[in-house]
Length: 156
Image (cartoon, rainbow, N blue to C red; front, side, top):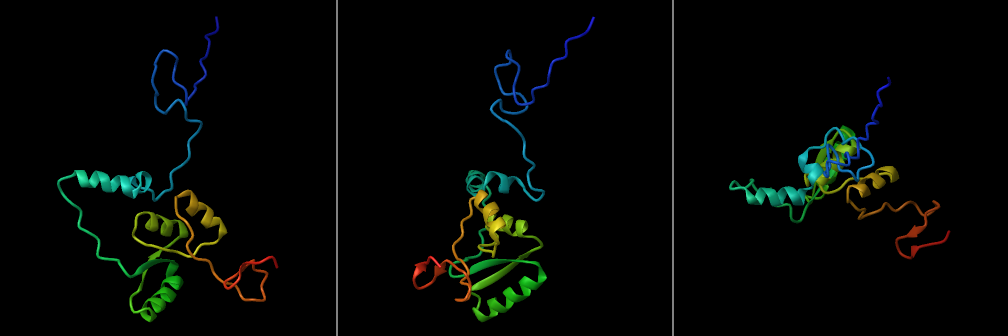
């Protein structure tokens, strides 16, 4: 006599349980969390700040960052250029460094940095993390750009 095998449905609980088991019944799959993600990155800084405020101990406040921007440079060469920019700006720009673009995005999400230069693919990723572009580069006039800083969008 053959035993009837039950198919494992990872995202659906047995009918008699009445509750989510292991995963929510509404889940359709799993996605790997980035290697450097921690609880604050996953839950978000607002949620973590709210939890911190409920604790008796208050975290040491960050130094005042009003009037300056912390730019995240990817790698040593970008950090060197950023340091020159910082010197020219009399400290209005401060430089943070990370080995990868993804690590810079994590620093921005964790409020350890404010800005980074991104290409199109990383802009998409940043958007999925709730970040938005605030500046764009202005290409030379002889390029096929569709934005003129004086006229706005053009139809070249």
